[in-house]
Image (cartoon, rainbow, N blue to C red; front, top):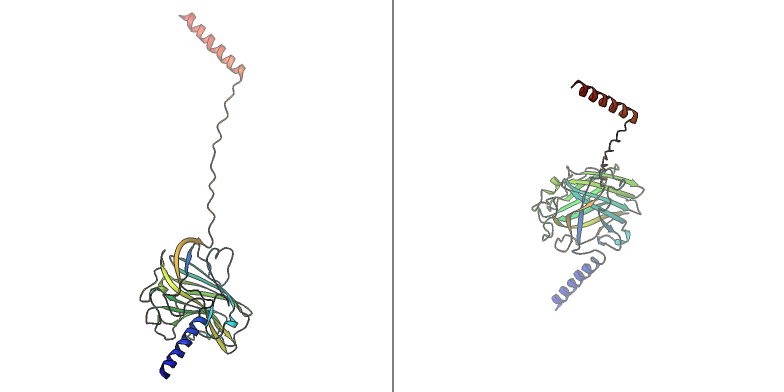
Length: 288
């Protein structure tokens, strides 16, 4: 009886955790990532229309859950996604009310301290957990020198704190405690898992977006979908819907040829020529 009671209590705790972890996050939603007509400039700033019509994901207290720490400190974040055949593009705009007490040290390797964002991606949407080679779990952070870094928090599921994603390009801005992170992750970055992400139209992967919020001595991990579970995480599909800056079509003006003006003749000249021709004809006839 005592053992049964313990099992029931443990089950209630698990159910309670599951309920609290699914209050705002969405599960297995289908979302489309449009194709960038023109690659954005990776400078940490949205200039003009370069991110227009990109997929927009809103992360806040109403759309997320805290898998650790507290949801009370959740900033307002907007994540943007686009792609083209060269790779994936990502932009995060995070309105953070508190400056972090801990800042990520450059080249530290773990990429899991201070403020920043993460995404957990399963190329095989049926995969779950952190099995070796099954997932990409990357962190994008503003380092202690004010520059952005992008690295693997889990190296393709090994659980070890990873290294830089060398081929990626990343930039950031800071305005007080607010920050942006903009990245280009070329296709080669997605080739190392057991099931590589092929960056072409129709590719689908499971993804959870994450905000790392450092508030005082507490870091909260705030998620918008399932935690380490591909089947129930939101699904993202690459489409050829157009996003970003679109060049205006070149206007070619039709050339209309102006007809030549009709020639006009002096009637006096015509009469004189006619008289000469007539006289010449009369002279020839006389000779005959």
